[in-house]
Image (tube, rainbow over all chains, first blue to last red; front, side):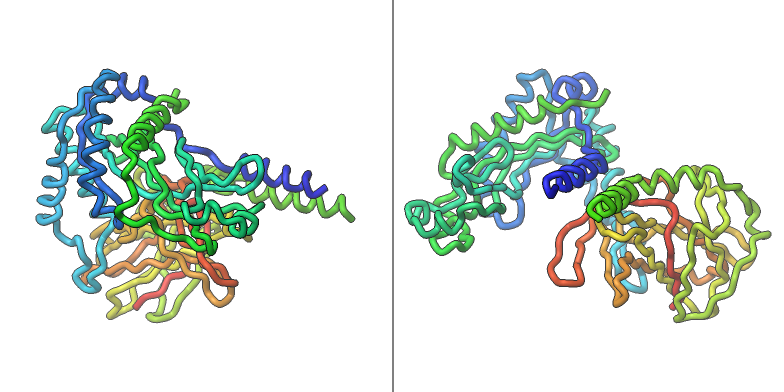
Length: 247
Length: 194
């Protein structure tokens, strides 16, 4: 009976949710062939790795998109335009309370996108970078002790913990998530609408240690396996390709 | 007993999933439009520092250019420079709660439109919400009024009906999590002049 109840619950929850529809690579190329590349960004906390990540991810992704038939141009000037518009904006902050007007700021960002698009003659913008998302795991005999996210999988137990029987039995039957890094490619139009996104998991940034506590990977041990960058790029491109697309 | 329980759950879930924003939107579409001429609107008076709640479903509907919306017309109390709007969430469960994104039209003494303002908080960035002592979930925003403001029309952005907005949900029993609420065009709003 409980199973039936759960089934009904899931059915209704699923019925309520509608997932966003993104353009796939073919549709994207048909409608937005000339892409303005705005820049490479990393999430707070990963700044120390930015140069390393950029050197391994930026050029191959751009090359892969060119190979697929896109024309990729530099559109980093969008940030300069944005800053100029911000500097000249009135009432960005409430004169009495000092509160920032987010709506106005967003409008100015859209203005910067539109202005840059017109100046460069591009169709859409591309934003690329590395951020951190949840990598889910369920520890059982079928799924093992790996966390999965955006095509990637990795043991959620650190090297020191993997061999300890105590932690393995402690985790048995448990589920949860650990933070995993991913490379993302986002396409936006001049209205800042998200046209499409592709993301590929790179590497976990933290794992459980032998005491069952989350431990951040030391800076000298993360992002060393360059093969993971290649697979992340492939996962991201595949995700882009696989969107059902807008009809 | 079990069967009744099942039916109850079924009804609860279907009512929760009944897409209230769509129902509200359909209801709004059938309402008569009034009050095109602002000079003929009856603006009610309200004291400062006193929150008054309005049920938008009981209010008249007016056209605001691209869309229609229920509205509340209030004469600004003297010496008031700020107005807070409390947008209360509809629904029993946070999982399918809905609320409105308030907008304000500001008129001068001659009932001439001075400005149309929207909250500083951009809804796409997620909105800050609060749970009061009675367990009511609300989003509060504050508008700074121009010095020559005299009459105000509070209404909602009906174009956003059905859009999802993220909130950082703090439950009564502790902890917090991101949840998704939907915009609709009917809810209770509290208005408080400072």
